[in-house]
Image (cartoon, rainbow, N blue to C red; front, top):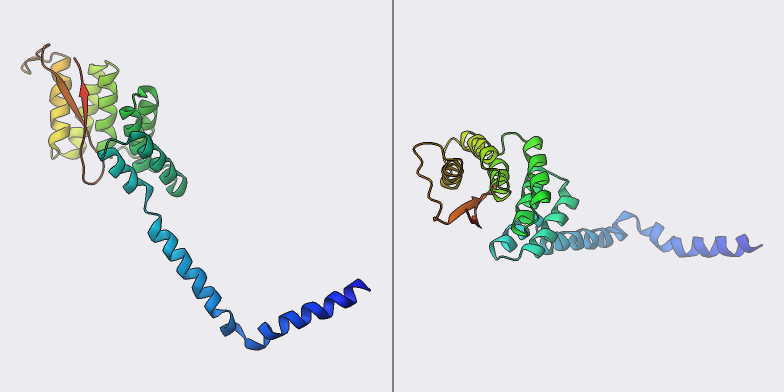
Length: 190
């Protein structure tokens, strides 16, 4: 008996919508579409936000933005490289190294990941391997990036390659690079 009373009630409720056709639902669909577009405009790409936060020195917030980008885009080479770079800035060298090695494996031609891996290796006091990694970054970049060229020279100074004049008293600056514009400096002590 209960189905007899609810059945006609449901039919009466659906009757006005059914009689109007799909045009009656059109404003609802348009409203949902506009709401989705507004959310996407309010919710910028996590990588862009992370890069801006890195430039501002807000590394914890940048890490959160990069993690969000990873959740949205997957662990692309850009996301892995960004996560590695921010972990380096936060002093988490082992995590940075692991993420940057994953980035270089994901795309063996991505010079910024190779460069940033070299910076991590220098911070871990592995100048020989860092010099090898900087050479790869330099070759992939065709020598266009002044930061990569500078990092290679500094690493070669550290391993005391003849002709590069290593000075123990000189403070050493290594540059982080990423795809796109922007530059991050990492100060390293000899």
